[in-house]
Length: 402
Image (tube, rainbow, N blue to C red; front, side):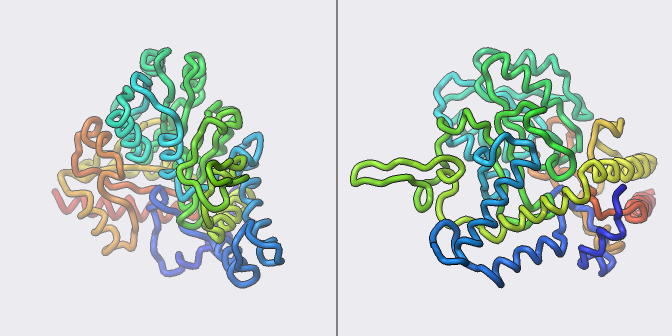
């Protein structure tokens, strides 16, 4: 069971009375994570892997702990498979830039992807003549697995698929897609930005070859993210940047890179942020992701049904709660979603996201709403009364249109 009242005490920002429902964009950060980052600045502020003195040794130890914590959190085989990046976007770009593409290679992706897992592949199409095939779901965002079986053939080299849509909240069949991809010697990259913070993600159970996610959506700070890459693939993946810290040896006419993850983490990293990510993982493990998932499922059911019952409100995504996570996107009549978001903030202190959510193709092609949607997204500190307040305020906005 999730002790929400106790958890909320770790988020003093909520004491002001605001209702924060923009967690799909960025979560709030609890005091234990902030304190752990301050510990670095107060007690051992130094660079990592650069010095023999005690500050550097302590900073390096704490920084390296995060690789191990992430590996354990997603059930990777080894911390060498964990590369710290700035965010999920950089992690995906590392894969896109780090593989040796050639004309005729094929990438399969989907219509519901965040731009970070979409336009990177279109750029490869433009640069190298790589073929990009886009699998389309139904209007609820649900896929027919047969469409992936048709799209993924022997020409396919990579399948890039979100685990959870940041607009529709729908879970995708990543495990089934992994099996199809591997049957054609293709690899699977999973965008886990919306799943890792909310669900128990096991890379070995999924069978994915790459997994990208961000710290700022899972109670951690901004400026730090993760790329998981299966160990066998690391030697053939080129770093996005090279320089300080990435080398094993340098001569006048050649250099040798270090092993992973060192060779992928050039220059001085975001040390405090990495340490903060480790603390956020500790926090989530203590709360238990299974409890978080149950809590969010109960709240999203109430949110979805409450909004769907308002006559002029259109709610998007799966109708079955087991097919979605704590994300609900909607529109109110012909109102611009930005106007709705502003009204919620001004009149009820409710913070939501509005617009296309970095998913323009989804909004244009699937929802037929070029201006986007209003998106309310939940996390472990949200409550039933907050959901009720959202629904009642949206109802008032909708009634004003009558």
